[in-house]
Amino acid sequence: MVSCMGSLWLVLSFILSLILGFSMMSSEWFKNDKTSFGVFVQCAGKLSSPCNQTCKAFRTLEEIPDVSWKISAVILFAGWLFLSFGALLVLSWTVIPAGLCHRRVCTPARHTQIIAVAVTILGLLLFPVSLRSSFAKQICNSSLSYRSGSCSLGWGYMMAIITVMLSCFLPIIGRYNINEMKTKVLRSKLTQRMLVCEEHTH
Image (tube, rainbow, N blue to C red):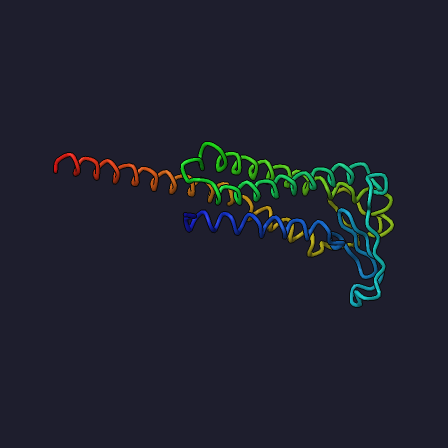
């Protein structure tokens, strides 16, 4: 039986994993009136008319225009993979006996989510370094590392930041879930012992 805290852990793990993946596929990490670009996608055209925009996906690392951009793309993708794998571990916990939670699944799931948060934060911090690239300078008018020039932050970057902030709570929820499961297992053992003692007394 999945606890309330376990259900919350499961739902949040999958939702945050999906949101992070969606934000990484967005082109609106930095934008101006005519162009926007994200980790893996660049779009040209007026943002007020999305149907008329022309978008290009960076299918390989060679297509990404800057070294720091490439590194941050790899790191962010790895962070998303860790977060998704952590969500799958939490899902697998729901189909195994409660007694195996701490030893086999719950603790690795928490550790995977901690790694995912740390890796994603590193990628988010590194990505603005790519504003110094010639590609970003053409779009953002003489932008520098951590200075976006005429560009502004887009919703994709902000969503990724909010997602990783919320993901910080996943290992904490997982810890509470472990404690709750331990309490339930302990109560069931005590109940069984009490029943055995009562049978012996009769």
